[in-house]
Length: 523
Ligand code: SIN
Image (cartoon, rainbow, N blue to C red):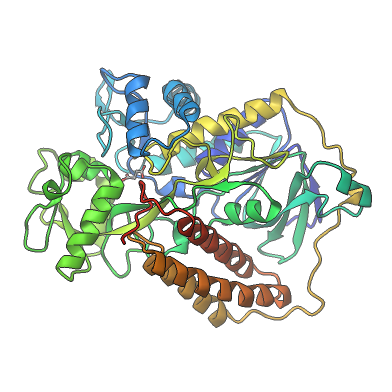
């Protein structure tokens, strides 16, 4: 284990899902020195790894213009037209060049000479490339294998980013106050030694993924607590659209299933939502029925559950599938079976879960944030692609496209850091470090998650949001105090990030009186 207290690199990339990995691959090819951080000891652990459905390309009889229209319609037209244009025009080319040619992703085929394009809600064409129902896993594993071949890439697993390092804030030089604020790297906790390292880099890319795990029920892995939003906010970068939290309509309803996702492609392949009494209901809400935009399907399920005082509805694939379910959805079949549901024989109990944050760190078409030398890509960023609600399977594509763009841009405009590293101070530890009581951390997380789920969830009201603000503000003071005295630990750091993210979502939701896309207010 390396004991270096200070590390230097050209680009620091925090997060290793598709966005961070594609940025790292592009930077590595340009010859720059790269450090990639993952807070998990398992490098592949990321939202990308769990993505089932697939990645948008262009299907048969399909055009960038059509894709653009679908993205804008899902996003309620508050998307950035420029960002949508980039995604629609560069998407397929990037998938072909990076995923198919470079990484050799074995996308599922409908015949020996044709890729299989899946259908998902909100798409006017079948255009989703997939590797059966484990697309993200396949992509993530190939990226990691590719990155490990570069000697200029150093991957640090089990390292948790604590805060961004910014000048003048972390500088000992009083004259730095007269310079434009900039990011110079990050303070990073080595989860094993519990010591904080100073990583100095002229460019930092946040690719920390989303924040679904700040809600009680989520399709995201438990690490998705929004570290990047919290750090960027504290560093002074602009954060926008945090009220647009997308809920996936269908996660498996089971106490131990941890929000296991039942991919939208199940409905794309004909599956229909039914009540406990066996009645379809989506036709009562939208003429596109089960393939209506995700936010509408989610609210319809919520309404049906509320009306019937039930904790779930069913997703019925078996009555509608004209194909071999086990072959098309092997992972969903196997996982459901392990919880006692055979999807080839019976409907699946499902419930909505927090899934994707459509807002984030505001970035331009090259992934640059409002803070100099800080970039962000993937879910943690807000490029404007998704507007008020994300179109299914566009997130992997956005991560891939912006990951490549950010590093191409940095490589072609590279300027070494101007700040003298000796003037940057290292991490200050509390005078007396107290052992952490896990019961306190667990209870604080329960409070954060249930407050957001109940007051800033699928259906919001002004009163609920005001209550959330009051409760979370109070909790923040307690957590701050705890953080200042506690022995450094990734759980303590996570809690500090989590409460910040909960407040960002709540304040954004309170500040927007208009129901739009994933932000729905009931009066
Ligand atoms: C799914 O497979 O339903 C998830 C796809 C997505 O969220 O983009």
